Every structure is written in structure tokens, then in C-alpha cells.
Length: 325
Image 1 (cartoon, rainbow, N blue to C red):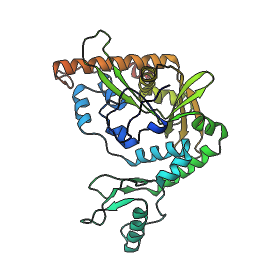
Image 2: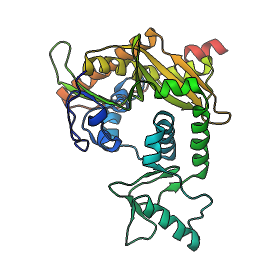
Image 3: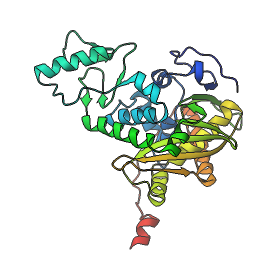
């Protein structure tokens, strides 16, 4: 497989796969103008509307504590050495309202590569080589939220995964970790705009049976087969699987042999399970992805971004509601 070269800070990606020497940093990846799964998924009629797509495109979500925790766990589980180099745990037990603790916090942040706003002693911004602080959600212009509970969760989950040799082998085996894939989606009938996409799967493992794509998940809603099946369907995780399977083939001229979820509990005892998504899920995800692409092309062509119906809609009970009575 040939990997095109690209400066890691360049927000514009050419079609192809980026890993190794051409690995794209997370901040550069999110700065790309290409569409991601979370953006295009909003155009599925069962989820949202073009009007919401436009609004969310102009208002990207801020990093929450949950997102920071998820990124830290992903890195710790898959690349422990990179975690040590890029993350830092805050000193335990600090109360940032006390003077002595403020000084300890300032020393820690300075050592971690963060820069203090001289006009406001509590505002910090990451320097060019700053470490990511476990349990700390930073937002420009705000002091940021710190959760020691999240720090303990990251530590405990990392220890649980490291103590499971089989799971560690899956997450750290031969393959690509957080590689970036970019491709251009041409209209099937030749009519309409070419759409530009990106994706960043957690893992692509190279096995004797082919390339296996792995999505690492943490869940507080249960990880038994029945409960995880509901998560896959209600949260439409199959959309991501179908889109990523298609995107991998477009970006690499190769096909994945399977799409897997490695799911770990978000609370003690931090057990894990591995699920392979059935082909029916992948087919449904591909179909909904192509539907969303058609909707986006139509909106671009007409320059219209409608919301919900302005007429009164009669709301009928779902099959689930009817069956339960």
C-alpha cells in the first residue's frame, strides 16, 4: 500500500492513507475540511435535517470530559508508549481555589507545556508541544474542568486492559493505530457534487484473513450481546461501520475482512467483550451513508437546507410500543 506524503499540520488531505511517517495529528485531522462520519450522519432522515447539518458544521462540539476520557483510554489501551509521551496525570487532591494549590497547579501546567494568559491567572492554553491533561477539559476563554474521577477511571481501565493478554494483542497487534483515510465520493449517476470524506478508525489489524477494522468502545450501558446489540442499533453504530468499510476500500483499493467492536465497561470491574458486526449491519450502514450523500448533493445543488415539516404530523405508536401493551 502506498502512503502519500503530507505535512502533519496541513489541514487539507489528498485521497489516500496516512500512517507512520505521514501520520496525522488529531488536531490536524479535525482541522481538515473533509467531512467526517459525525457530520454526514446528521443528514440521515431518521436522525436529523439539512438545517441541523449546516448549524452543527458551523458550531463544532467542544471537548467534553467524556471525550477527553475516551481519547485517553483509547491511547493508553492501544499505544502505551505514546500515552506516556503525550499525556500527563494532574497532581492528586488539588483544590484550585486555594493559593497553595494554585501554585502547584501552575507548576504542573507549566511543566506540561501549557501557557498562562497573563491577563487572567486562571486561563491556560496549550503550547505547541503541550501534553494532554488526563481528566481536564479545556475550552478557549474558560478555566477548564478537572475531574479526578476520570483520572482514576483511565488508570483502572488501562490496568484492566493491560492485564488481559488476549485483549492487548488485539489492540496492539500488527497494524495501524488511528491512521487517517481520505477519499472522494463521486456521484453514482455522474450528476452532482463530488464529496470529500475522512475517517480515523481506532485500529486496522493485519491478519492472515485480511485487514480487520477495530473500533474501541467504552460503555456504561452494559456490554452483554443483547445490550450491545441495542446500542449498535439505537446509536446507529452500524452507520459508521458501513461508511468506514466503504471508505477503506476507496482510500486503499483493499477491503476489510471484518468490522469489530472491542467494548470495555466504563465502571468496575472494567470487563471487556469483542463483537464482530454482521454483514447485514454493514450493508445497512453503507445504504444509509449513500442516502445521506444524495441528500447533501441535492441540498448543494438547490442551495436549500430544510428543517422539519411545518405541518402538523400525526404521531403514531411504534411497533415496540404496540407490542409491549
